[in-house]
Length: 263
Image (tube, rainbow, N blue to C red):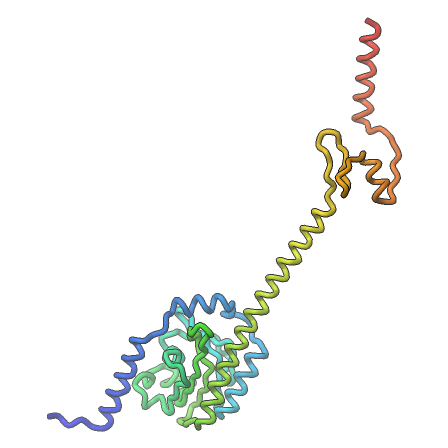
């Protein structure tokens, strides 16, 4: 029997772990739907998220920390410390695409020793990732959206206390997303209420007028002439005159009456 070295056993174990992860992939459609509900993708930077990213960098003692969100084809950075030009990356190169398959912090002490990442372009090239720790952002419905992660260009490990604090920050990111969603929903509801109030106010200013006799109905369901209604409900006083159209009609009617009388 061929001798199996410790390094080969380690490689086999990592490949087996990767295979199991691939079989338990999160649902990309559910993730995309949740991101649409949060209305978070491609939004401007926000101080609340940047503060949590800075805390992650401080707690994990890494130069780079990110809040990442993954849709169906890309990894987008909502917040970034140590990567000022960060915008988005292809999903196939994202460490976080592996991290969201876990319910705890995914810890990679040295990416060059991990078969999942050893040939990753972000390991072989800039920013030369060695250490990675990603805490998944899991919604109350159990949908992983992305991570809040810490990255370094040198191998390292996190203590249990650091991992616990890192996971707590991930929960805070979700709380921020939930708060944003609630505020947006309240703003929509408030706008709808104000629009309804404007419509009620407009309807209250309408005068119910008879289409035949042109009388106006008051609040007591009594019908009055327009002149009487205005004088009773406002400071208006009515004087009478005659518009050109009615003046012409009146002259025509008088002429017709004279002709009938003459006959």
